[in-house]
Image (tube, rainbow, N blue to C red; front, side, top):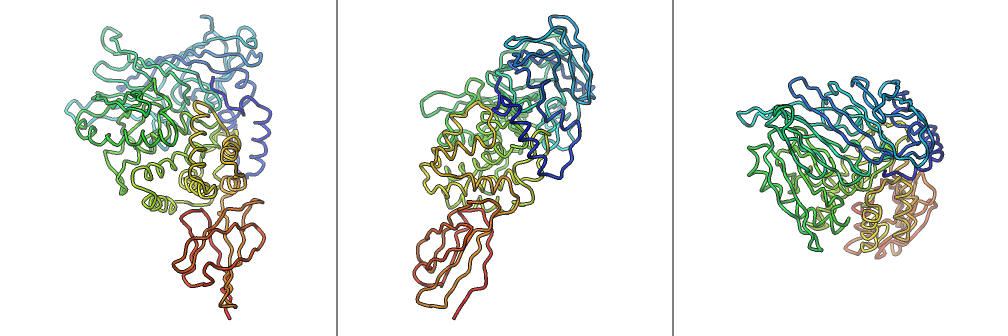
Length: 554
């Protein structure tokens, strides 16, 4: 029952959603609102536990099973919403072994309870279903099942996986498909043709033959809250090997790797980068947050995905030009930001992606130092578009318009580091965010307020500029050398947000960097060393654009 603050304050959430939608010209469908909105049929109950049990048939590309949902009643109700895509057939919905009436509205199912559900009660219902789930055309960017074959061996084994971020977990299993509410734990039982392995999230609890030996049932238990879109299945004739990571306190973390049989030796060498990564992330974000469930990398036929404790890996054992495997480092970073600390609405996915993309830079700094990290960040900078706000419209499950929540978000956090101008304070604040908000759902203002409080600096104007406005702030300046013995710089910020005051470093000649603190009114200061020769602005410490007025000379 991991609930966000906005879910606990439904009226506030609805008002915020109305405000956000009022500021955009986008139009959303009823299906968008049913999926993304919080209405009494959703807020009246909180999920405690999912018990998902299903069979997967690669021959027919179909699934069939049930999900038992244990929930606690928040406010009295007799009608509730559960989500399951319209192409999937509901076979029955029961409570206390008695059938319940329900109606469909597209991908939403509205269930009428046989009796009133009273505040504080813990109840269960079971939904049985079947169908051929949506097939992903371009995973993981669009959601669905992936039905492939492992062509690396003569057995040509079936290779079945699923990824559903954005599109929604309800494309393949019935649940309360909203980010604001997660179960406290979950069991996943998956039956597959005998000879295949099913790797899901969490801790492996065992396997057994079923249906006269035609199938094997694999049981996994998730000991922690989990985003619905992180729930996954990975099915093929996997080879398995294991390792351990030793934390700074001496505790051992199980590392389990599931790869195609022909890739074992390659994977053993390539996955060695997991341990230095975990050490770096422990330094910056605290210990791995899903310790009892362990850490897994599972080979998939698509690029990758941050499935909790079962990270999807499909990068074909390749490092980037900076010497590390982007998929391992990025998707594992989501274990801290996205899986442990989670946003409450898809509009706030910047919380997941900005911090995780920034984690790549921190890994670079841990392993290769700050100058090389600046090179890496400048490669990211080339991908920033500045066309849409990073914070989207609430309550409608809107897709992100571009990749700025990754690269612009990473640069925003890098910029804030140098605005704080105290690495010990900045990194302590980031670590506190990851550890104190561990296993919790957060929203944008909560994250911003937390970092302001921990650093002791009002970072709100900077966050507001980068998150809520697409264009970069502009550093507007001119150089006056009329008095050659005392040249000056005239400067200000052009920004959308009052109080924007990002410091800017300048230098001349071979001198040291000196810091200006521009506001939105013009200021004048002498140039360092009383010379305009070799004038430079440090663009490696901040995300902004330049507007250089005509230089005034004698």
